[in-house]
Image (tube, rainbow, N blue to C red; front, side):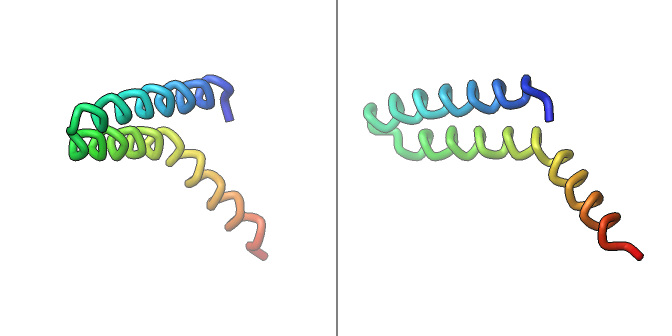
Length: 64
């Protein structure tokens, strides 16, 4: 796993948490939820290839 990916995930987490708090305090709970959801989806798309690679490696490990 690349260290850049970890920094990207941390940056998205910080940005999403700040935006979510600002939106919640201004009374826009729906937009705050959508912002959090969009951040989650973005990070999942980034780590999905690594999860796929992990499952392939586990499958290769248990093949006889």
